[in-house]
Image 1: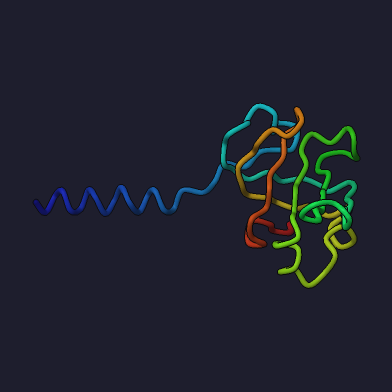
Image 2: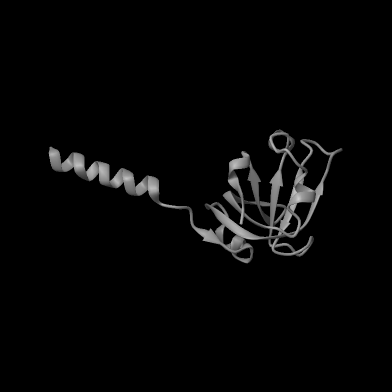
Length: 120
């Protein structure tokens, strides 16, 4: 019984201390459906104030339309930031943690909480 308890604690501690895999923006297309961290430079960004959900799109790895991944920040998350991401984060290196999904054939991560974004 005691050995089972120790093994259970060990397995749980390993599970909770394992960090998300980190990849470059260029590798995002090979990780559709995976939850991980993508680190790279934001080349261009745009705030679509008149669109539904008022998205801010951060183009990581290259300028639009050649960016290998788009980071999407909808209005509900944007309001939690104290700055305009399309101004502050252009030409900055960021790490974004989340699930990589396809939108119109292009990889993207939708940010659900500001804690998913880290400046390098």
